[in-house]
Amino acid sequence: MNTLKSTRTLPSAFNNYRIYHQLKCSINQYITPEYLTKRLEDLPIQFKTPKPRPWKPINLENINSRQILGIDLEVFIAILIGSINTEAPIRHYTQTSRQYLEPWYPQLAKFVGGKIAKNGQLIELGLWEKEEQRHTPVLMKVYTQLTGEKVKPNPHKARHYQPFLDSYHGLYHHGFHRVATEYGATCLYLWLMVHTTGELRAILEELVIDEINHMTKFLGFGIWAFPESNFLKIGETILKSMKGKLSYDPQQSSLMGTLNRMTEVLSWSTWSWQNRLSFMFTCTYIFYRLWGWTNQLTPAYLESLLGKPLSKDVFNESYLDK
Image: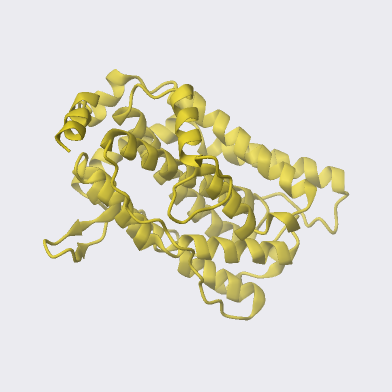
């Protein structure tokens, strides 16, 4: 139950304490080893019998601006627009990931991108897309409820599949970026959830649960598929993806460039310093909790769950064949 009150009726220092308390409680509720492990162990089940997670019934007509706590309405609306435009090109995201995965891990490729006919037509949606495609319409409905107006999505240009001669590093690079974006969505929606109440909080909670589910599955799968990954390799991946650039490039997958773009689309410059600090706390604490969980994912456990991953030699042979 949300115990936060409107910032208009509480002293600032006390309200900030409540915000951080709620953030920590919510993160401790959802980012636990037990909860994350259940989400990961669900992945091989979803490979065989994919079934979208049902959302609980929520009366969206009851959403109103009084349910926003500690964020200016204008800032909240700007974040909504940025989220809508980021979520909207879900088909491009799923098909790009499918192309990277299909030669090596067809089960996960189908999970994210569905089934493709020989003529290239999509004949079956992937479970990831089925769950993610619910987000844009509901965010648009929230926008309408808060403003009385309709919003027309302006999706950003999603990056196309770019084949790498070195398939091993190409897949690792793309997978790392996909986990990072799911992590960012988890942080943002959980942060927004804590700043809301009523039906608005309830719908944001559904988004949070979806994003945690997907983030956990992709992260766990990545640790299984690339067991030799470490901080040095992650740092090397970030530096290589940057190629000396800090700005966003739609033709180049760069984590720093993506962060730069997201600060723009989410109108970061208009956030109060209290909002910025609490959001950075959210990202840091979620990362801390995730790191503790990943340290428990031993190769033996992951192989018992997902089988034996492809060796680097298999990728190297493909590279030499080309």
